[in-house]
Length: 370
Image 1: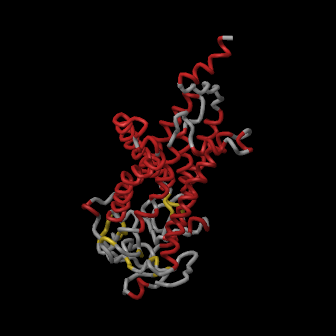
Image 2: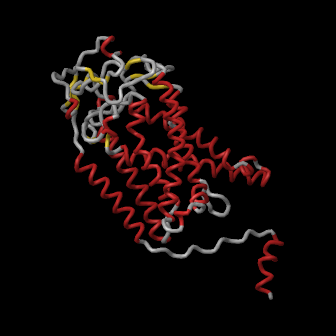
Image 3: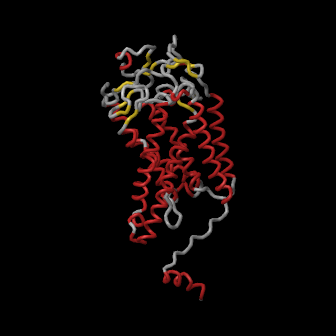
Protein backbone atom coordinates (compact mmCIF):
# COMPACT_ATOMS: atom_id res chain seq x y z
CA UNK A 1 0.00 0.00 0.00
CA UNK A 2 2.85 2.35 0.86
CA UNK A 3 4.52 1.57 -2.44
CA UNK A 4 1.36 2.32 -4.38
CA UNK A 5 0.96 5.68 -2.62
CA UNK A 6 4.58 6.75 -3.27
CA UNK A 7 4.04 8.33 -6.76
CA UNK A 8 1.09 10.30 -5.39
CA UNK A 9 3.18 11.48 -2.42
CA UNK A 10 6.00 12.55 -4.75
CA UNK A 11 3.56 14.50 -6.91
CA UNK A 12 2.04 16.22 -3.87
CA UNK A 13 5.47 17.35 -2.70
CA UNK A 14 6.19 18.82 -6.16
CA UNK A 15 9.29 16.69 -6.67
CA UNK A 16 10.07 15.77 -10.27
CA UNK A 17 10.25 12.03 -10.65
CA UNK A 18 13.53 10.82 -12.11
CA UNK A 19 13.30 8.97 -15.41
CA UNK A 20 14.09 5.28 -15.17
CA UNK A 21 17.69 4.35 -15.77
CA UNK A 22 18.49 3.47 -19.35
CA UNK A 23 18.82 -0.24 -20.07
CA UNK A 24 22.42 -1.06 -21.13
CA UNK A 25 22.65 -1.60 -24.87
CA UNK A 26 24.96 -3.61 -27.06
CA UNK A 27 28.01 -1.75 -28.32
CA UNK A 28 27.94 -3.39 -31.74
CA UNK A 29 26.13 -0.43 -33.28
CA UNK A 30 28.99 1.87 -32.22
CA UNK A 31 31.60 -0.42 -33.78
CA UNK A 32 29.57 -0.58 -37.01
CA UNK A 33 29.05 3.21 -37.09
CA UNK A 34 32.74 3.96 -36.68
CA UNK A 35 33.67 1.24 -39.18
CA UNK A 36 31.40 2.79 -41.81
CA UNK A 37 32.80 6.25 -41.07
CA UNK A 38 36.39 4.99 -41.26
CA UNK A 39 35.66 3.18 -44.50
CA UNK A 40 34.18 6.29 -46.08
CA UNK A 41 37.15 8.43 -45.05
CA UNK A 42 39.60 5.77 -46.21
CA UNK A 43 37.92 5.65 -49.62
CA UNK A 44 38.06 9.43 -50.00
CA UNK A 45 41.68 9.63 -48.86
CA UNK A 46 42.77 6.76 -51.10
CA UNK A 47 41.26 8.35 -54.21
CA UNK A 48 42.06 11.99 -53.39
CA UNK A 49 44.79 14.07 -54.99
CA UNK A 50 46.56 17.37 -54.57
CA UNK A 51 47.30 19.92 -57.25
CA UNK A 52 45.16 21.23 -60.12
CA UNK A 53 44.95 17.91 -61.95
CA UNK A 54 42.44 18.09 -64.80
CA UNK A 55 41.96 21.84 -64.23
CA UNK A 56 45.65 22.66 -64.65
CA UNK A 57 46.34 25.89 -66.52
CA UNK A 58 48.28 25.13 -69.76
CA UNK A 59 50.83 27.88 -69.14
CA UNK A 60 50.76 28.77 -65.43
CA UNK A 61 52.09 32.21 -64.60
CA UNK A 62 52.15 33.74 -61.15
CA UNK A 63 54.31 36.37 -59.54
CA UNK A 64 55.14 34.16 -56.53
CA UNK A 65 56.18 30.58 -55.96
CA UNK A 66 54.40 29.42 -52.80
CA UNK A 67 55.23 25.95 -51.48
CA UNK A 68 56.34 25.05 -55.01
CA UNK A 69 53.10 26.28 -56.63
CA UNK A 70 52.75 29.45 -58.72
CA UNK A 71 50.51 32.01 -57.04
CA UNK A 72 49.40 35.53 -57.89
CA UNK A 73 49.92 36.81 -54.34
CA UNK A 74 52.53 36.43 -51.64
CA UNK A 75 51.45 34.06 -48.83
CA UNK A 76 49.49 35.57 -45.95
CA UNK A 77 51.83 36.61 -43.11
CA UNK A 78 54.70 35.12 -45.12
CA UNK A 79 53.57 31.58 -44.21
CA UNK A 80 53.36 29.20 -47.17
CA UNK A 81 51.67 26.19 -45.59
CA UNK A 82 48.15 27.36 -44.77
CA UNK A 83 46.54 24.30 -46.43
CA UNK A 84 48.33 22.06 -43.94
CA UNK A 85 47.09 24.19 -41.03
CA UNK A 86 43.50 24.08 -42.27
CA UNK A 87 43.59 20.31 -42.77
CA UNK A 88 45.06 19.77 -39.29
CA UNK A 89 42.25 21.87 -37.85
CA UNK A 90 39.58 19.95 -39.78
CA UNK A 91 40.82 16.40 -39.29
CA UNK A 92 42.08 17.04 -35.76
CA UNK A 93 38.95 18.82 -34.54
CA UNK A 94 36.63 16.23 -36.04
CA UNK A 95 38.69 13.38 -34.55
CA UNK A 96 38.58 14.95 -31.08
CA UNK A 97 34.79 15.31 -31.14
CA UNK A 98 34.31 11.76 -32.40
CA UNK A 99 36.72 10.38 -29.79
CA UNK A 100 35.13 12.27 -26.89
CA UNK A 101 31.54 11.42 -27.69
CA UNK A 102 32.38 7.95 -28.97
CA UNK A 103 34.05 7.17 -25.63
CA UNK A 104 31.05 8.49 -23.70
CA UNK A 105 28.71 6.40 -25.82
CA UNK A 106 30.86 3.30 -25.26
CA UNK A 107 30.97 3.93 -21.50
CA UNK A 108 27.22 4.56 -21.15
CA UNK A 109 26.23 1.82 -23.61
CA UNK A 110 23.96 4.22 -25.45
CA UNK A 111 24.36 6.87 -28.13
CA UNK A 112 25.35 10.12 -26.48
CA UNK A 113 23.51 13.07 -27.96
CA UNK A 114 26.84 14.72 -28.75
CA UNK A 115 27.77 11.81 -31.01
CA UNK A 116 24.38 12.01 -32.73
CA UNK A 117 24.96 15.72 -33.40
CA UNK A 118 28.51 15.15 -34.68
CA UNK A 119 27.29 12.50 -37.13
CA UNK A 120 24.49 14.81 -38.31
CA UNK A 121 26.76 17.83 -38.80
CA UNK A 122 29.22 15.71 -40.77
CA UNK A 123 26.32 14.84 -43.05
CA UNK A 124 26.11 18.48 -44.13
CA UNK A 125 29.14 17.72 -46.29
CA UNK A 126 26.61 16.42 -48.82
CA UNK A 127 25.50 20.01 -49.45
CA UNK A 128 28.96 21.53 -49.65
CA UNK A 129 29.50 21.44 -53.45
CA UNK A 130 26.11 23.15 -53.85
CA UNK A 131 27.13 25.84 -51.35
CA UNK A 132 30.45 26.32 -53.16
CA UNK A 133 28.72 26.55 -56.53
CA UNK A 134 26.07 29.04 -55.43
CA UNK A 135 28.58 31.13 -53.48
CA UNK A 136 31.39 31.22 -56.10
CA UNK A 137 33.64 29.54 -53.53
CA UNK A 138 36.84 28.08 -55.07
CA UNK A 139 39.34 26.29 -52.84
CA UNK A 140 43.12 25.95 -52.93
CA UNK A 141 44.12 23.00 -55.17
CA UNK A 142 46.86 22.15 -52.66
CA UNK A 143 44.17 20.70 -50.38
CA UNK A 144 43.73 16.94 -50.59
CA UNK A 145 40.57 16.86 -52.69
CA UNK A 146 38.25 14.68 -54.72
CA UNK A 147 39.68 14.73 -58.27
CA UNK A 148 37.74 16.74 -60.80
CA UNK A 149 35.80 14.54 -63.20
CA UNK A 150 35.20 11.67 -60.74
CA UNK A 151 31.71 12.62 -59.51
CA UNK A 152 29.12 15.07 -60.91
CA UNK A 153 28.36 15.92 -57.25
CA UNK A 154 31.86 17.15 -56.43
CA UNK A 155 32.34 18.70 -59.89
CA UNK A 156 29.76 21.35 -58.94
CA UNK A 157 32.48 23.02 -56.86
CA UNK A 158 34.18 25.90 -58.72
CA UNK A 159 37.56 24.18 -58.37
CA UNK A 160 37.67 21.13 -56.09
CA UNK A 161 35.92 19.53 -53.11
CA UNK A 162 38.45 19.16 -50.24
CA UNK A 163 38.25 15.95 -48.22
CA UNK A 164 38.89 17.71 -44.92
CA UNK A 165 35.66 19.68 -45.31
CA UNK A 166 33.88 16.51 -44.10
CA UNK A 167 35.34 16.59 -40.55
CA UNK A 168 35.52 20.40 -40.68
CA UNK A 169 31.71 20.51 -40.78
CA UNK A 170 31.67 18.50 -37.56
CA UNK A 171 34.04 20.94 -35.88
CA UNK A 172 32.62 24.15 -37.35
CA UNK A 173 28.99 23.43 -36.55
CA UNK A 174 29.23 21.33 -33.41
CA UNK A 175 32.20 23.16 -31.88
CA UNK A 176 30.71 26.62 -32.31
CA UNK A 177 27.29 25.41 -31.11
CA UNK A 178 28.86 23.84 -28.00
CA UNK A 179 30.54 27.13 -27.17
CA UNK A 180 27.30 29.05 -27.63
CA UNK A 181 25.42 26.59 -25.44
CA UNK A 182 28.08 26.82 -22.71
CA UNK A 183 27.71 30.61 -22.58
CA UNK A 184 23.91 30.28 -22.58
CA UNK A 185 23.92 27.79 -19.70
CA UNK A 186 26.06 30.09 -17.59
CA UNK A 187 23.92 33.17 -18.31
CA UNK A 188 20.71 31.21 -17.73
CA UNK A 189 21.96 29.86 -14.40
CA UNK A 190 22.96 33.37 -13.32
CA UNK A 191 19.52 34.75 -14.23
CA UNK A 192 17.79 31.89 -12.46
CA UNK A 193 19.88 32.49 -9.33
CA UNK A 194 18.77 36.13 -9.27
CA UNK A 195 15.12 35.86 -10.30
CA UNK A 196 14.30 32.18 -10.02
CA UNK A 197 11.58 30.83 -12.30
CA UNK A 198 10.68 34.42 -13.28
CA UNK A 199 13.95 34.75 -15.22
CA UNK A 200 13.26 35.37 -18.92
CA UNK A 201 15.93 32.91 -20.04
CA UNK A 202 14.45 30.27 -17.74
CA UNK A 203 10.94 30.80 -19.12
CA UNK A 204 12.10 30.95 -22.77
CA UNK A 205 14.93 28.43 -23.08
CA UNK A 206 14.86 27.91 -26.86
CA UNK A 207 14.54 31.60 -27.78
CA UNK A 208 17.30 32.60 -25.37
CA UNK A 209 19.52 29.76 -26.61
CA UNK A 210 19.18 30.93 -30.21
CA UNK A 211 19.87 34.57 -29.32
CA UNK A 212 22.95 33.79 -27.24
CA UNK A 213 24.26 31.30 -29.80
CA UNK A 214 23.87 33.83 -32.58
CA UNK A 215 25.73 36.53 -30.65
CA UNK A 216 28.53 34.15 -29.70
CA UNK A 217 28.98 32.20 -32.92
CA UNK A 218 28.41 34.84 -35.63
CA UNK A 219 31.77 36.60 -35.01
CA UNK A 220 33.55 33.23 -34.87
CA UNK A 221 31.98 32.05 -38.12
CA UNK A 222 32.77 35.31 -39.90
CA UNK A 223 36.31 35.32 -38.49
CA UNK A 224 36.88 31.78 -39.73
CA UNK A 225 35.72 32.63 -43.23
CA UNK A 226 37.81 35.80 -43.15
CA UNK A 227 40.95 33.88 -42.22
CA UNK A 228 40.23 31.42 -45.00
CA UNK A 229 39.95 34.22 -47.55
CA UNK A 230 43.08 36.00 -46.30
CA UNK A 231 45.11 32.79 -46.35
CA UNK A 232 43.54 31.97 -49.76
CA UNK A 233 42.57 28.51 -48.60
CA UNK A 234 39.21 29.45 -50.10
CA UNK A 235 37.89 32.68 -51.57
CA UNK A 236 34.68 34.27 -52.78
CA UNK A 237 35.66 34.75 -56.42
CA UNK A 238 32.43 36.67 -57.08
CA UNK A 239 30.45 38.23 -54.26
CA UNK A 240 27.52 40.55 -53.53
CA UNK A 241 28.06 43.71 -51.51
CA UNK A 242 28.57 45.09 -48.99
CA UNK A 243 32.13 43.77 -48.84
CA UNK A 244 35.36 44.20 -46.97
CA UNK A 245 38.29 44.35 -49.37
CA UNK A 246 35.88 44.40 -52.32
CA UNK A 247 37.58 43.67 -55.63
CA UNK A 248 40.62 42.10 -53.98
CA UNK A 249 41.45 38.42 -53.84
CA UNK A 250 40.46 38.17 -50.16
CA UNK A 251 37.14 40.03 -50.46
CA UNK A 252 34.63 39.04 -47.80
CA UNK A 253 30.91 39.60 -47.38
CA UNK A 254 29.81 41.83 -44.52
CA UNK A 255 26.12 40.95 -44.61
CA UNK A 256 24.94 37.90 -46.51
CA UNK A 257 27.32 35.18 -45.35
CA UNK A 258 26.95 36.22 -41.66
CA UNK A 259 23.16 36.01 -42.08
CA UNK A 260 22.89 32.80 -44.08
CA UNK A 261 25.48 30.17 -43.14
CA UNK A 262 25.12 30.64 -39.33
CA UNK A 263 21.53 29.43 -39.66
CA UNK A 264 22.99 25.91 -39.70
CA UNK A 265 25.00 26.67 -36.55
CA UNK A 266 21.81 27.84 -34.83
CA UNK A 267 20.06 24.63 -35.85
CA UNK A 268 22.97 22.69 -34.35
CA UNK A 269 22.46 24.62 -31.11
CA UNK A 270 18.85 23.40 -31.06
CA UNK A 271 20.05 19.81 -31.41
CA UNK A 272 22.24 20.25 -28.33
CA UNK A 273 19.31 21.48 -26.22
CA UNK A 274 17.97 19.10 -23.59
CA UNK A 275 14.88 19.77 -21.46
CA UNK A 276 14.68 19.19 -17.71
CA UNK A 277 14.08 15.51 -18.32
CA UNK A 278 17.11 15.17 -20.63
CA UNK A 279 15.06 14.88 -23.82
CA UNK A 280 16.22 16.38 -27.11
CA UNK A 281 14.10 17.82 -29.91
CA UNK A 282 15.20 15.29 -32.49
CA UNK A 283 14.99 12.45 -29.97
CA UNK A 284 11.35 13.22 -29.24
CA UNK A 285 10.52 13.39 -32.96
CA UNK A 286 12.42 10.17 -33.68
CA UNK A 287 10.38 8.24 -31.13
CA UNK A 288 7.25 9.00 -33.12
CA UNK A 289 8.67 7.38 -36.26
CA UNK A 290 7.88 3.77 -37.15
CA UNK A 291 11.52 3.10 -37.95
CA UNK A 292 12.54 3.91 -34.38
CA UNK A 293 11.58 0.44 -33.12
CA UNK A 294 13.96 -1.31 -35.51
CA UNK A 295 16.61 1.37 -36.00
CA UNK A 296 16.46 3.77 -33.02
CA UNK A 297 19.91 5.33 -33.33
CA UNK A 298 19.85 5.61 -37.12
CA UNK A 299 16.40 7.20 -36.93
CA UNK A 300 17.57 9.74 -34.36
CA UNK A 301 20.61 10.69 -36.45
CA UNK A 302 18.38 10.92 -39.52
CA UNK A 303 15.96 13.31 -37.81
CA UNK A 304 18.87 15.42 -36.54
CA UNK A 305 20.31 15.48 -40.05
CA UNK A 306 16.93 16.52 -41.47
CA UNK A 307 16.67 19.46 -39.07
CA UNK A 308 20.13 20.67 -40.09
CA UNK A 309 19.36 20.05 -43.76
CA UNK A 310 16.25 22.22 -43.50
CA UNK A 311 18.25 25.12 -42.06
CA UNK A 312 21.00 24.61 -44.66
CA UNK A 313 18.37 24.64 -47.41
CA UNK A 314 17.21 28.08 -46.24
CA UNK A 315 20.83 29.22 -46.43
CA UNK A 316 21.19 27.82 -49.95
CA UNK A 317 17.92 29.43 -51.08
CA UNK A 318 19.25 32.80 -49.94
CA UNK A 319 22.50 32.27 -51.80
CA UNK A 320 20.58 31.12 -54.89
CA UNK A 321 18.54 34.33 -54.82
CA UNK A 322 21.77 36.34 -54.82
CA UNK A 323 23.34 34.33 -57.62
CA UNK A 324 20.33 34.04 -59.89
CA UNK A 325 19.50 37.75 -59.68
CA UNK A 326 23.02 38.77 -60.65
CA UNK A 327 24.02 40.26 -57.29
CA UNK A 328 27.37 38.42 -57.09
CA UNK A 329 29.06 40.85 -59.47
CA UNK A 330 32.26 41.92 -57.67
CA UNK A 331 35.22 39.87 -58.90
CA UNK A 332 38.10 38.88 -56.62
CA UNK A 333 41.28 39.94 -58.40
CA UNK A 334 43.79 38.68 -59.06
CA UNK A 335 42.75 35.05 -59.36
CA UNK A 336 45.13 33.52 -56.79
CA UNK A 337 45.64 29.97 -58.06
CA UNK A 338 47.82 30.65 -61.09
CA UNK A 339 48.30 26.95 -61.89
CA UNK A 340 44.52 26.39 -62.11
CA UNK A 341 42.06 27.47 -64.79
CA UNK A 342 40.10 30.58 -63.81
CA UNK A 343 36.53 29.87 -62.73
CA UNK A 344 34.61 32.43 -64.77
CA UNK A 345 31.00 31.29 -65.37
CA UNK A 346 29.74 34.83 -66.04
CA UNK A 347 32.68 36.10 -68.08
CA UNK A 348 33.52 38.83 -65.56
CA UNK A 349 37.17 37.83 -65.26
CA UNK A 350 37.44 37.89 -69.05
CA UNK A 351 35.94 41.39 -69.19
CA UNK A 352 38.32 42.57 -66.46
CA UNK A 353 41.35 41.39 -68.42
CA UNK A 354 42.36 38.68 -65.97
CA UNK A 355 45.08 36.54 -67.58
CA UNK A 356 44.76 32.79 -67.79
CA UNK A 357 42.50 30.18 -69.37
CA UNK A 358 38.89 30.55 -68.26
CA UNK A 359 36.30 27.88 -67.57
CA UNK A 360 32.57 28.17 -66.94
CA UNK A 361 32.29 25.15 -64.64
CA UNK A 362 29.46 22.67 -64.19
CA UNK A 363 25.76 23.65 -64.04
CA UNK A 364 26.51 27.05 -65.53
CA UNK A 365 23.15 28.79 -65.63
CA UNK A 366 21.63 31.90 -64.13
CA UNK A 367 18.33 33.72 -64.45
CA UNK A 368 20.17 37.05 -64.68
CA UNK A 369 23.89 37.31 -65.44
CA UNK A 370 25.88 39.74 -63.29
